[in-house]
Image 1 (cartoon, rainbow, N blue to C red):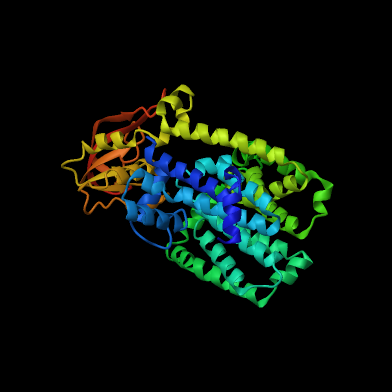
Image 2 (tube, rainbow, N blue to C red):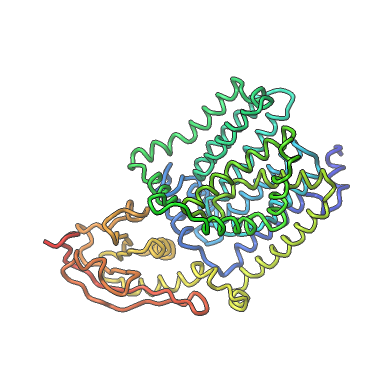
Length: 491
């Protein structure tokens, strides 16, 4: 028996990170299988992407589609299989943060860092819903680990520089927010000790590998009029009136929900201390990788708007910084309190997503409205479809759910743009084709035919399909029969 095995077996069960990580991930997978909540519209869109392997898609880089393609290819197109990689991405992120904290600090800090990530409030949701944050944070955390090895190791190792490049490149293929990582890396070079560690010929290998992995997506965007860049600019919304302090306050308050009340409060306290800015190299690294994404997204929130999760890339480094500081100053009780609160939240969240009755009683049905009722509603819509050449949809949410839940339908499902411009993936890559689709079933979010009355000669209202995804909530679509297409403008 090796020394490491003896330590593993001798450690108290509750202090063994790998055991806890396995149990938490197992519970998350079981929850995905048992939950009655279906996949949401964005997840349905990502699933649709996964049916056509590519190196780019309309609004996101491709890795989320690749991940879904892998899990559904292995286990079929069940809802849980679409989401299956999410908890494993966060298991991987927690593992890399555990190893990075061990490299930068010690085993005790590593344990609380890994556990802190597994129980972080934002990770609770991100492990349940398949979105781009999960792979982004996995590769970001991997990048921090390899950077920590380079920064604190006795000599530069080419394998670490190569792996760092791989993490950055694949992170960019997960979500464009990974661009904050090389930005923080550049700021790190302001420190002489880090320049000596990083400005070596091996750093060129890092850049080469990252660029090589990301290049296919750049080429794809160039071939498609940089649609993803345009979509990202639309999300930033810089064309409207700038300076929104209330939006920033909402964003700032959301960080307590993402990182946790105690960890985010501790982070603010640590950054406010004068002594923090007379820091050692390892703390300087973590401060830079915390503040770079946090300040950039905060500026976006002030200028226009920003969702709370847009700053998620700040928290792998922030978690190590806060945990290292609390362990160093003998405040482990604070970490225990935080972990206890987050464990209760984890239990409550798990029970909640397993019982729609409890969701209703807690008055939280509005939080999950887009995860309920889609299968029955799309079934009802498709009951009108026989005899038509296609089902035409003007709503991105609905068409994603239609394509997912009605995947075996012999009747084609297509998108029509309501504003004579391309605004989503379906309008760009699954558009209405008037040469093939002569008589169609049109499904619209509106209660009138304003989207199409200047395009079709013959319009007949058929009825309305309504779902009640939660208490006091109604989701309605109006159905029309359309024929006699004559173009987007009157003749």
